[in-house]
Image 1 (spheres, rainbow, N blue to C red):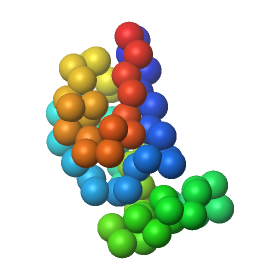
Image 2: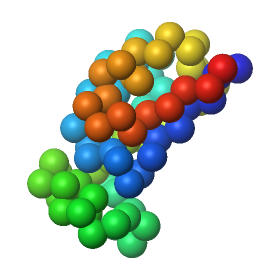
Image 3: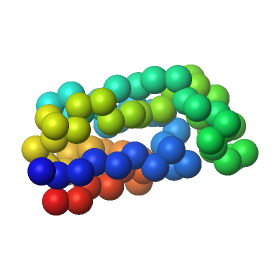
Length: 78
């Protein structure tokens, strides 16, 4: 089973990963206390949300999320 990881210090919440055909991701309020200063600023500009993996069992390993993420915040291990 593939493992999907979102790096919260890279994710700016642009929601491109929601293109996932199996609905692995969801946009939620960011946990600002865990983020670096610059990331906090960027996330606030994009609405204060970040991507979270909510259904890892749905991941088929297609890699679309990795391709469309403009920040390179998503990694996929097979």
